[in-house]
Length: 412
Ligand SMILES: [Zn+2]
Image (tube, rainbow, N blue to C red; front, side, top):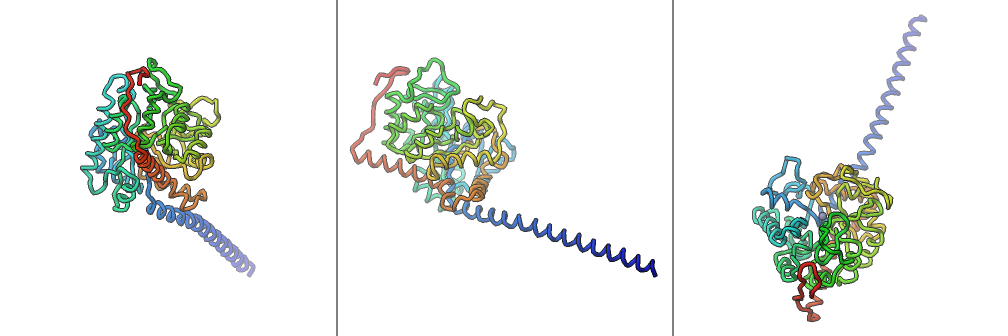
């Protein structure tokens, strides 16, 4: 009898233990289910916002492999070497891409800058010719909206490195006619009319303390054309000279915040505030070397080439800093994909990952309207503004300038 009672007690204990275990498991399941549900909902909403927004990226260097290696964007590149092709652009919900017509500083030294630019422009047109169902050339902000509506990706171009015009305002005008809609006034080299930010300079080239008189003439001519003035890569003095000279708002096609990552290519808070006031837009660069916040304090050494890792949180911190200092109307995306040797934050490895930005902004509490501004509306506004300034100047009777400089000197 006692033995039977003993067995029953053991069975009862086992049963209650089993029930406890089961309830714990089901509680854990509910918890586990609960979290992804909320996150899944957020992702779904982010996906919907992203899909219905015009996503604009202002800096992509795939143009270099297109020109130099015959790279074609038509098929997914599985080599892991590139970050851009049409299938991944579609996956990333990209509405408009500014292909970088990047002219290396070596051309300023050796000659052939304008030809190099034309070869790259030709490469972009050839990609559009080969893939007419996916790509279409865009020349205005309203072109971007129309092409986006048709389900294609708008292809635009920006010159990187003002030496591409070979000190000729006529060449600048012809580049506009070919479709160039912004020009980064310098690359790493100070040219004959604008100072570059730190980095490599050709020692023989004198500094101008910002823009020379001819540099100001270039800016005015760009205003008249309706070509956006890009201040990424220029020195701080050049930046402020542009703020002073340009009638249209400025863009930084691929720059981040210097308060978070102390490199001369990034923008100080003073510059961010000036862009806010100017009505322009800072397109945040994704390059690890420009967003790694371990180099936060001014005065600390700049990240060396080995600083080649960064996180999505660091990238988002740059977006949020620009939003805080310049304002929500003055920030956008300037990825620098295919220009940074793949040194990109984990989770933002290529153009197909762009929807992650939308998700991260939504997670941080930004409204749908604010997110659309960051994704593309801010850049579209600035581009329309540049077009408006051009129309106004023409209505005022402004005519093209034929001023010249002879190399290295300031004869006008
Ligand atoms: Zn660049």
